[in-house]
Length: 297
Ligand code: PEP
Ligand code: MN
Image 1 (cartoon, rainbow, N blue to C red):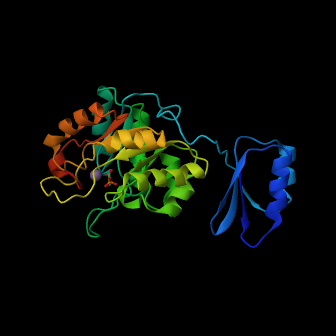
Image 2 (tube, helix red, strand yellow; image 1 turned 30 degrees about the horizontal axis):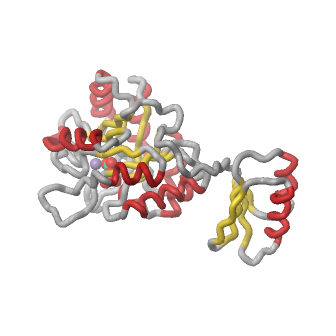
Image 3 (cartoon, rainbow, N blue to C red; image 1 turned 45 degrees about the vertical axis):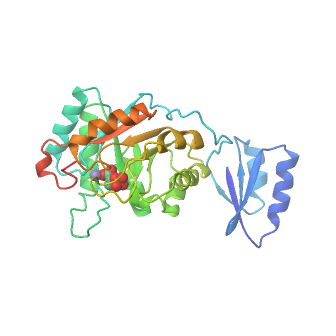
């Protein structure tokens, strides 16, 4: 449970005394508000007593476990976890063909972007809600789960209704209001590393989600910007063991975006698994030459 009080409101002091009296485990964060996080469950009687102090209650369960053992949140069990599918959802037929192909290999997680964060505003921006529907339909038909990107808080409800895992893209890793909103969502979040984010910044970004009560975070290394121009991005292979150790979260590797070239993808997959990655994300298209985004990879 999380309670927040306006910074000028001193009633939180008595609130804390009540927690002490009941020997409740909590911590306190001072930001623009005073935020008290109560770890574990509290009974309804105590909750009613705490509600009387006037703080705003967020009904989420927070665990004092920020270490973790790098395991995937339930019910995800597959190790390595493989997520595959097109960069963008383009049509029902494209997804059907892709899902049919992937499920033939036992792949259980179908990725695909319906809301696309494109560098150029005149590039294909995704099919939006229709794309979400195609994803959900193909996944259901082939017994797969959906992974798709959420770009903005305003899309949260519609995306959450159609997906099993929510992806936060590289361009949004620093979007703290989006991350905070995801802290109250009961779905696993695949948090991609910002293309210019340090490992620590990435792990702190995951903490924004975890602090809100959602511990189901999967980190995804997808390559960073360096001076090298032969590849689209540079896969930071050491980020895998380092982020695993720092966060206690599972870390997967997107082998498509760093390479920018489909020929190099198998090499990055091998490297990622050798480095201890818990899973792989890879872009797959039935006809890459005709793909509306990221065809070359
Ligand atoms: C994607 O997964 O298609 C994507 C846009 O990735 P990233 O956010 O890593 O660029
Ligand atoms: Mn892509």
